[in-house]
Amino acid sequence: MKLFKTEKAIILEHQGSHYSIHSDFDTLINRNNLHGYLKQSLSGYTRLSEAEVAEFKKGALKAPVGSQETWAAGVTYLRSRDARMEESKESGGATFYDKVYVAERPELFFKSLPHRVVGHGGDLYIRRDSTWNVPEPELTLYINSDGNIQAYTIGNDMSSRSIEGENPLYLPQAKTYERSAAIGPCLYIPEKPIDPDTNISMRIQRTDQDVFEGTIHLNMMKRTLPELAGFLFRETDFPSGCFLMTGTCLVPENDFTLQENDIVHISIDNIGTLSNRITYKPAK
Image (cartoon, rainbow, N blue to C red; front, side, top):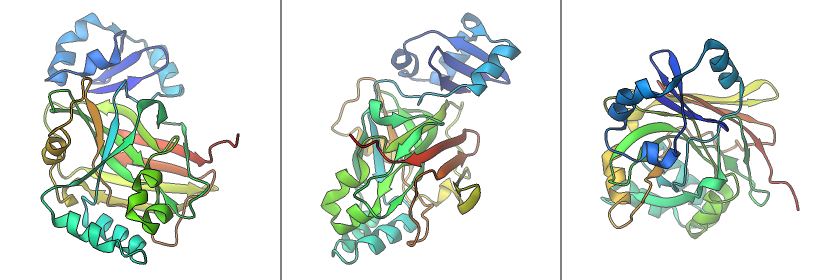
């Protein structure tokens, strides 16, 4: 099952059919056994015609987020650890990333409030005061208020690597700014937990040419998804649940930085593709 969020309604896709749901988004998704609830509720939803489905697919999608905060995990893959150590070696901060990779406690940090999250087809920003900006493709969890993983989606955890590399204490500025996160195109709600062999891929286009392309498997992650969710919920309550980006293993080479009008495509098996154009926040 997939849930899409549009300006007019919530759209449920199930076994090739599409249904319109008029409901409060937070109330709809914040429950245990979300898959079972949606399946049992199908008869009460409005089935869309082929023309309505075609119109829905042409339109812009909102991020499948309600009032939830977005958090992120770092250094959950070996490649990410190596990249963070490389960018911070001159500042003397490389040892922090080496230690957190093997520590019991993961790196978790606040990423975004919902009004700063962009959906599929929206513009993402790169910072003007950073010389090294990269996308970070990440499997993203929707975790309900009880701390249980209910759905999966695609996240782009934009990162200003020159700022974080200068000093690890600058992480909030490198990670949290206007339109620094994208989530979408939908919530994927399977009956069982996501397959560890799931592929995550990223392609970056610049003037209609691919300047980066790569694919990894989810099973390359050092930590488990319930482990990350458990640490996030240890001492923090999320009344409507939250989203958690789970880290990246697809890191472009150190001589790569995003440019204005680049298009970033992130795909995850069974979920779909999240595409966003890169630009700058308009000057005041």
